Amino acid sequence: MAVRDLISWGRGRSPVSRQLDPFAALHREINRLFDDFWRDFDDVAGDFGFGRQSVWPHVEVAESGDALTVTAELPGLDQNDVEVLLSDGVLTLRGEKKSAIDDKDRHFSERRYGRFERRIPLEVEVDRDKVSATFKNGVLTVTLPKAPQAIERSKRIPIASG
Image: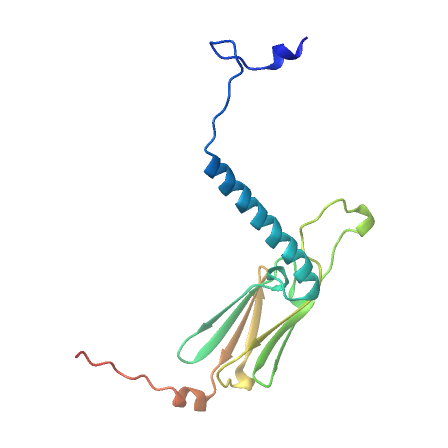
């Protein structure tokens, strides 16, 4: 088989040329360069604890009139792998996710293993004696009731139309 047999020919027996918008090609290439740069930065920064990847576990903090609720996603862990601490107005979630596979048996992994610690500063006083935590289906929920003085300090101010 000759190389000529592998070339796609049009009606005029000349190779078919794909005409692409050069600006679209340039746009795709610039996007690829930026994606590669940030991916490399996250890999390096994550090693030092300040990249986007280093923020784990993912948490959600919600506030109601009388309590704060912190929810953390901890897939693959159980309640014995996690420790919850409250000290000096900071809620600390820490623990360790262990691998079930030895490194010598692993060819490739995008999963995260190892120790973690997440500190969440609380902007209101909480009633330390009533704080509770539950763990279900890999989701940790910590309920932090506000202290009575914190509830009294906040006052809803009505807005008059005018």
